[in-house]
Structure formats: C-alpha cells, structure tokens
Image (cartoon, rainbow, N blue to C red; front, side):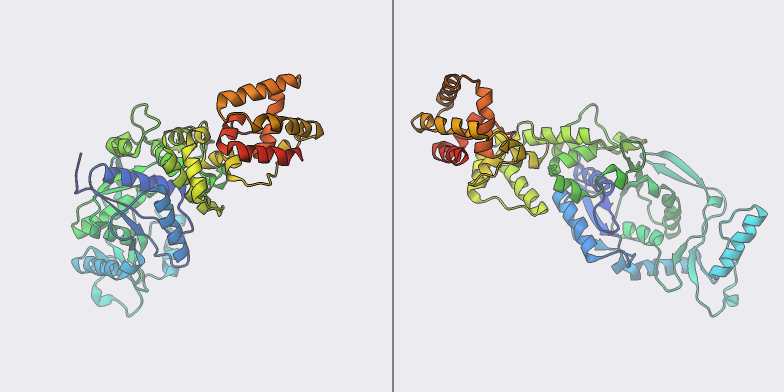
Length: 467
C-alpha cells in the first residue's frame, strides 16, 4: 500500500523530555506514513519562549533517535514562522473572516461577570465584531476570527467517529495578540497547511481544538486534513499516566535497559491492535498499522506486558545487534564502554546471556563474570559462600582441573567425582564456585563460565578465592 501523498507530523512542545505519550503519538504518525510510502515530519512547537530551551529540544531529538523514529527533512521551528502566521491573520482580516477587537481585559472580565449574574453564556461576544472601521480607536487590538454563530462544526474523526460541536459554544478566538505574536491555535493550522500535512494524528485532548482550527481552514479556503484523535495513556489504576505511576520520559525506559525495538512494539500495542498479534517486527507494524485499529478507550500502561515483549525481542536479536544496543545503553547510563575483546566475547556467547533476559542490564548481569577483572569482589550474598571450609575445598579442587581436558563432559565428570569424594552433592560445591568465578550468587551454569573463561583464568580465580 503506497501513497506518497500521505504526510503526517509529530509536533511536541519542548518542555524537558520526550513523554511516553508523545512517543506513542510520534510512533503512530511514523507507522502510518512509513507504511504508505509517505512522509513523516517533525515540528517543534517552541512558541512558549519561557519553557522552550535548546536542551529540551535536544532531549526530544535524542529520544526520537533512540526510538528509531526517523523523520523527513529538518525539524521545523514554529517560533521561527511567526511572520507567516501573522500574514495569514491579516489575510483573514482583509477577507472579512477576522476583525480587530479593541476590548480590554477589564471589559472582557466585566462582560463575563455580567453574563454569570444573568445566567447566560460567558463566551465573550466582542462589540467590535461588526463595528464600522471608521469607529476604530487608535489603541492596541487583537485580531479575532469571525466564527460562525449558528449551525455546527462537524469533525469526521477516524478514531472518535463523527463529533458535532455547536458553533454557539465556540468563541471568536484570538489569532494575533496585541503585540503582534500569533496564538498557538492559529500557528498549528498554518504550519500543518504549509507543511502539506494530510493526516493529523494526535491525542484526544486536542479534540475540542480541532473544531476551532477547522474554522481557520474554512476561512482560508484550505483543505481540512484527516483527523484522528487517539485516547491518552492511563496508568494501571485507570487514571491519567503521571509521575506516581513511574517513568514518564522515553529516556527513563532507555536507562532501564529496554531495547528500542521492544518499546516500539509495546507502544504500538498501547491503544492499537491487529488481531491477536502481540509481538511483531517494524516491517509488520508498518504493513498492518491503520487508523481503524485504534481503540476509542484509553490504553493502560502495563510493565508486565512490556517485560514480556522486551524478552521476546531480546530473544530474537542476534549477538552483534545486542552488543551495539548494550554499548548504547552503557553510554546512556554513563557506564564503562565495552572494549573490543569484551564486545567480541559477548557477541560470541550471546545465546547464553540473553536466555530469559527481559532487559539489557540483565544480560550484563549474567555476563558479569566475563566482563570483570581479577581481583573478583564478591557481593554480600556470594561472600557468605566463601567460608574457611569452602576455601579449603576450592584449594583441593584446583589440582584436579590442572590436567583435565577443557570440555563440558570432562569438566562435569571431574567436578561430580570430586564432590562425591568430598561426600557432598555438586549443588553444595556450586555456590563457592559461583562466588569464586563471578562474585555473584546467581550466575549462568558453572560449566558455561569455566568454558568461557578458559583453564588459566578459571584456575587463577579459584586460587585467588581459596586464598
């Protein structure tokens, strides 16, 4: 299905980080465009100068990069287009679709107080709407849209269905402030039109905005894009996702060690479905994604499901790719980068380390014995396995390993025979061996570790622990 005419956009406000809800909006737009051979654009809505910082913009771009959501062309700054927005406001003024309003804040407040007292609508009705320009004072003014007063605005929404909003419930919105700066409501429409956006896929908190924005499209005689307002993400308790539910920013999930492919898969399933498919590739998601698959109800964030999907993606990745992701993870958390020999050793033994892992740190924890240097510092639990008796056993074991051929079968036979001679079970021998080889109480199999470390390093670690 290829439609190069399709153009979607993601338009975040740079307020510090890429929110998980914003990331899903970006993903839906990316999937829709990429699956149709269309274009996916990025616009930074940085008109709020107090909150928009270069650092916040950089954080959004980095979040997009990590998630693998590539966009076409350069990111567009809404703030830099203020001149164009003002030009459109003046065009509407000239065509009679907008008017100059000289009402002061005090006059608007007085109007609302009187309306409240009379029990009528508090939507401001400007006395300047139909005033003769000859009566205009030499004073500051805003430019307001001359919105229709009767009838209704109908949004044919691809997710919410047909939404009808009575025009008498919408005021004459301000398009240009008295200082000549455009409002967000005008800027969004002008930018979407100029960027050629055909499909506006965004959170349903913008649904009411759509009715007002459609009036700007009508005033300018522009084609209205296809709207799809997606429900917001809720926490497991059914309330809007917030700090109390845990991580909100994409970079927090990156720092927890979830692979980007798993995050894309999980976020795609958060509010959209394709039959019963839970785990899928980017290619499948792009081929399947359609607006009709988005549910009307809010999706609930579920860490158990994310862990399950993450484990499936880790299991399907090859060793080289996982090593690259581990390098990226270590970089994100300020960890020590892998050396070339460590990266090679990890890639070669990855089937052992990725088995059962749900996150990248779990792979590193399993591979700890391979990535750590002598002297091995046992953690608290492992240290308990290295008492005087255990050290004595390790001292006695070492000569048995000096001449054993370094193959799994031989090592198993040697260690089991040694345990029997000590009148104990191999399980009792395993704990001090884990502590000596890895400094951990939970590790891969003792035999796997010995084979990967090799004879010399294994014996050196046992000697060190026995001392």
